[in-house]
Length: 287
Image 1 (cartoon, rainbow, N blue to C red):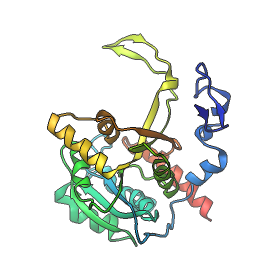
Image 2: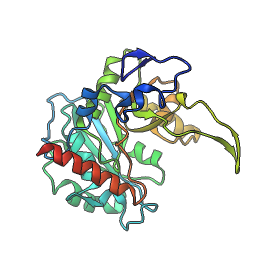
Image 3: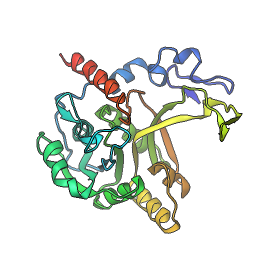
């Protein structure tokens, strides 16, 4: 496999994290000019919808935010003047091939989410709501059910990842469409920490981390393939950790698309500091 940062092959013994090409992180996975595009500012993004858009976005915003410790959930937390959910949705609104945005949130809070995070901002893309389930997988399926058959692709995204960019979304979509046999494409980056296999409190081994990647969203799939994968999982009582695991389970081929590590998911209070810093950087770049 070639090293995306250098276009040179990675040998079997080369660790993609400690190797020379990755010491200038986070550009380890992309050429500098590509990374700079993916890190472009989200501020004042103009909405855009193509006449024959092929993709629908399902944004999962059903989490309770218990670990974050904010009443009402982290998706509605205001950062730099906008709810976290709004930052996430705006990135998809700026991708012309996205013709529909489905926001999945607690059913009893749909009106609040729509009023505060969507209607208060100039979205161009149609936005509809879907009820969240008890599990992430249920929420994803409920959102998928709101996507009409005329959309060929579905992009699943965590509403608590506000640093996603239109360029990263478009790059992931293009990667899937360029493949003749892939059913999906997910964003991720190589594991940067040493990994341990444990049993209880005992370490059983240290695997070679060169084979491990941390996976994020967006995750883009053929709508029909993802829908079938969800149906099979529902029938067989299988619960996966993400949508990709469902597609993989039914034999689908999923590509891994290298992306910047700052595309973090807000989970604990200290994550807010990182997100604010990322947005400050982008705001500065727009001046």
